[in-house]
Amino acid sequence: MSDQPFSGLKVLDMSWVMVGPTVARYLADYGATVVRVESTLKVDATRTLPPFKDGVSGVDRSAFYTTVNANKRGLALDLTHPRARELVLALARWADVVLESFTPRVMRSWGFTYEALSAVKPDIVMVSTCLFGQNGPDAEFAGYGNLSAAACGFVELIGWPDRDPAGPFGAYTDYVAPKFIAAALLAALDHRRRTGQGQYIDAAQAEAALHFIAPAILECTAAGRIPSRVGNRCADAAPHGVYRCAGEDRWVAIAVHDEEQWLSFCRATGNEEWLADPRFAGLAARKENEDALDTLIGDWTEEREPLEIERLLQAACVPAHAVWPPGEMKEELQLAHRGHFVEVNHPKLGPVAIERSRFALGRGERSEYFPGPGYGQDNDFVLREILGLGEKEVAELESCGALR
Image (cartoon, rainbow, N blue to C red; front, side, top):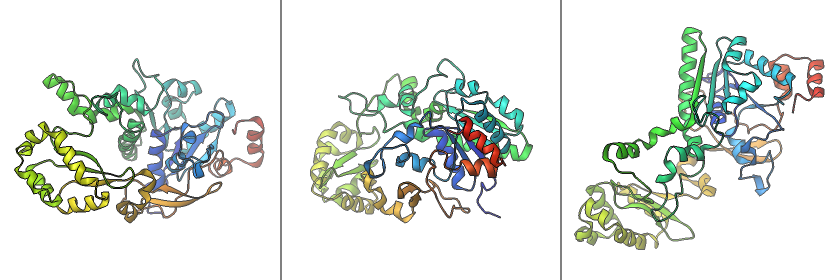
């Protein structure tokens, strides 16, 4: 018997892009059997996103898709076809969990509401996740996490005060929401285990991220101040920024939060004369003279390598870290030590790197990882082994156009 915590859990993953597939991957990483439904007629956006293996684009070449959907089985279905919809209902009878991430009208148009699925599997746990939830004036708003980040106020806060808003990197809520959805899903599964009752989870991705902007909301509602972008600076720390280092496009992040750290910073960098400079005597003074302070620090950092500065300041108990270019993350010592990246054999691309599980449980770590599936890669396994269909039935499904 497997010691993986989700061994035996069966998941029908009808979601796409980032949020739903990430939640399903959490389960797949620790033993769940996940069947991912896609259609060649409507390409998942992650298949079109770079980086691509060897810089060559293609629906099976995206590193993004390959890692987000690792450890899943792939089934190609044209859900506009009645026979394909029959297969979905059959998979719902098999599944413990159904995940979807469309706008509300999509699943309704196919007849796959929670009420319909629970009619064929009364204890099913279903998760619906979209930007703004299943009801309300914005429920049908279709888009990605960069849009919900804008709607929640994050974009206004990120960037430089004399420039247009830059926003957090990427589709911010796409990266935040899966953690909270996974927690809600595990709670629902525990409830099901104890009571035999299914659950329906309506997860609005914007709401899953909104609490991270709580300090700015409080500043506005309690103090009447509308916060805006301040670059890399922080009201409670100085210096606080990202500073250019020796080399091409090399940087280090440094944060000094209190006087003890300021003392350690000046001593570690060999700039003890800054301690006697009245411009920097206390946080309030350093904030008032932050431009001058950043210039001095930049003059010091640009003559040194990022890792040299990181080690020097960390040894002095000053928060600092080299800024790693994404292409070099595999060489970062902490990630390498934890084996965060693993090499898998892609059937079309050969050896490729994907991320291992984002967290390590005390037991049940997967012994083998495999990349996100190609279109219909596991049609035979799902139809024959999971649904128990025979040769004639599979042939009919192929000939009628349901499997595409």
